Amino acid sequence: MDELDKKIISELNKDSRLSFRELSKNLNIAVGTISHRIKKMEEDGIIKGYIPVIEPSKAGYDFIAVINVTIKRGKLQDVASLLDKFNNIVSIYNVTGNYDAVIIARFKNRGQLNNFVKELQTFENVDKTNTSLVLNTIKEDIRVKFD
Image (tube, rainbow, N blue to C red; front, side):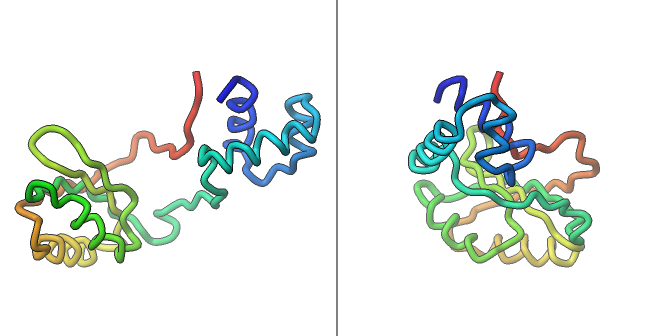
């Protein structure tokens, strides 16, 4: 990735619905160059897709949980596979420290959170969980920004 690719991504971060022509005008770059660069970044997996950014609380998902999980050695992928069926999981991270994984998930209510954690604790390779409920979101941004 070079500076032009970063500028293109920066523009797409502002509005991913911009046409190649609009990007061309905004960046003062030929439409063909814009088209080629975007297609190349898509082929290389740098750009994985274009999705609407939803405000979760307006969709009813007011509860954010950070769930730390201890998993039996070498079984993280097995647990991650079981978690694929849950649409409310935002992220799963393999981490260092006292836990093996961190799950970030959103729920409509405490009951959904409670049911999720109880089911997670029944997974064969899950040893322990520790759940924190997010009180306030100070900053949250899914876009990658460049210096």
